[in-house]
Image 1 (tube, one colour):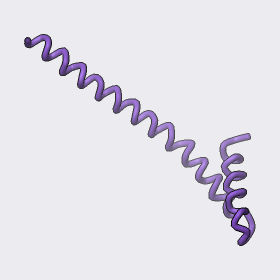
Image 2 (cartoon, rainbow, N blue to C red; image 1 turned 45 degrees about the vertical axis):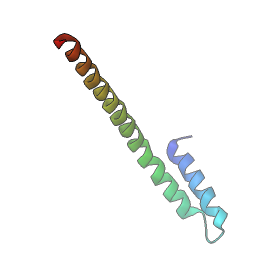
Image 3 (cartoon, one colour; image 1 turned 180 degrees about the vertical axis):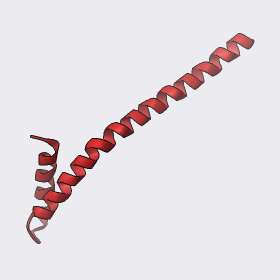
Length: 70
């Protein structure tokens, strides 16, 4: 099953628990949310990993600079 289908199933199930109306709008929200997260999560993870690498390189550069000048 695709991410969109699983998102629709979960959204529909959550919406159906309220019992107010059909689960169709919850399924739609779940499908849209799944597709948005499919794009946003890899971008966020890439940003965090890149930031960590740059931060570590900065610390390493400061350490090397102190040892060379000492």
